[in-house]
Length: 171
Image (cartoon, rainbow, N blue to C red; front, side):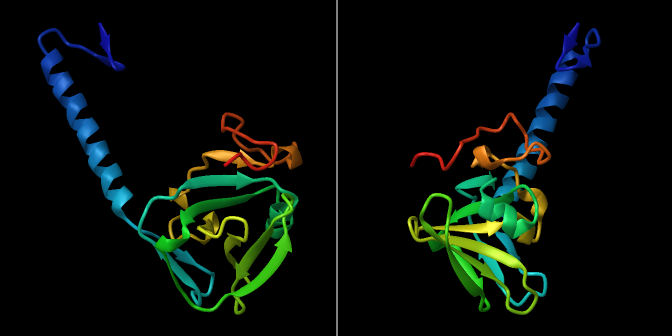
């Protein structure tokens, strides 16, 4: 018979169960260790740094026209955190613009190297969105939803299984 994809050997099923449990425990420990690590990152020249000692509220791929222009591609990818948990060092330049939603958002970038580092929102001052590629470990970014799908292009391949919104999701 089969159990979790492994063959159960007659008389060895207890051993295989034990191995499966040990593997699950090891994955949990590795996941838990990673969960306790702060998110850190910054610009390309390290003049601006941030550290956030908690998990993101959301990880979002945004296909709005502004995010397309900012990145020179089909979408922007952001880890969104509570602003109160962000430790920020360095002085960013800021640029305010009216977003597709009609609300003002502020893009922050490094005046030295020009790298975009974060975005804040006048309509929601309690959040702080970090560019996924600005993280020290961008591999921790796992998109959870897509905003502004209505602005997406066929050539920008985003995981279709992710929950998506034509514009911003309701609060």
